[in-house]
Image 1 (cartoon, one colour):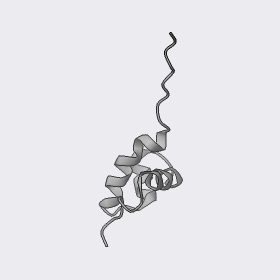
Image 2 (tube, rainbow, N blue to C red):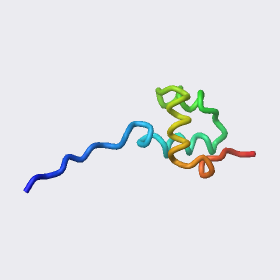
Image 3 (cartoon, helix red, strand yellow):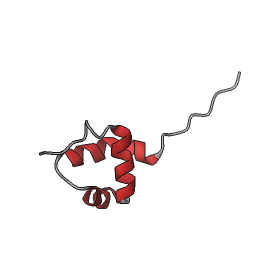
Image 4 (cartoon, rainbow, N blue to C red):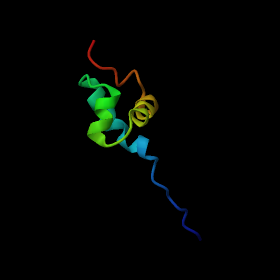
Length: 59
């Protein structure tokens, strides 16, 4: 019996909860990216994957 290889999720999926939390505090993607050490495009992808509606910041 072979054991299936388990790959870790892509990086943007791993940082999505943190990115979402920071977005809810009102930070923009570029500021979140600087804090997490990634580009604003990676943050946008993470938030889109996590659910933009759930990550909405303060109005």
